[in-house]
Image (cartoon, rainbow, N blue to C red):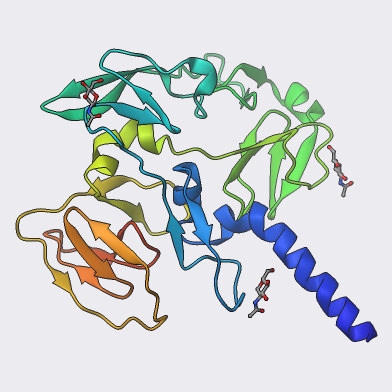
Length: 278
Ligand SMILES: *[C@@H]1O[C@H](CO)[C@@H](O)[C@H](O)[C@H]1NC(C)=O
Ligand SMILES: *[C@@H]1O[C@H](CO)[C@@H](O)[C@H](O)[C@H]1NC(C)=O
Ligand SMILES: *[C@@H]1O[C@H](CO)[C@@H](O)[C@H](O)[C@H]1NC(C)=O
């Protein structure tokens, strides 16, 4: 009976953490959660990582831009307070050749030039895109408090990404090792801002190595794209959509790039991963 209770508590603790850590620990979860998709729970609870997600209609009208569920017509701008990514400024919808996309102001971070050849540390605030301060000189730097995270030491004001979290945090004097909203925020890839038309066209996000990081681009279908049927080991009924092609878990699609593999792993988007050796 006692063991049972402990087991139940353990399961509850696992599920409790599942929600917060899913984006950092599961392939494609951060991507889908940013788009407002919801996880389809696993039937056997065998892992916190969902086999598939259900996405809302991300583009009810293909002549409009969409950001976090809200429509933006030609030439309208996303209010800055709604934007989850501090490096995206004044993003405005443009529809050209029937393809909606956002154009944002260019952000150019000017790092303080180290003129005296003295050592400097650039410091940040949690919601800033560029550094907001500089601490120079060995003595001043030595006085900064530090944070020890995942085997590395950061100085007060520096930014770090704790392993398996998909969060970026700022080292403050009172960091106690907890990934807490007071000094951490979700990493936001600006997917809808940068890839509006690719998402509309059901293209596939391309990842360089880790499928938990932000995608480096999107692969769109071409006239030669073909589905190669694979083994649906998970017997999943969810389908991936790639342009007009539909496929099941385990299937791959042919792409022209030699060093990239695109497959249906976590529907509904196809996942492309670049390979170093091929
Ligand atoms: C999986 O978890 C849900 C909710 O936590 C529970 O209702 C269900 O019975 C569990 N399924 C299995 C097979 O353990
Ligand atoms: C899409 O939006 C445009 C511009 O607002 C509107 O003229 C058109 O009727 C809409 N199309 C549909 C199918 O709702
Ligand atoms: C760390 O600080 C946060 C508040 O900033 C608090 O909620 C949490 O319990 C603290 N954790 C530890 C391990 O002290």
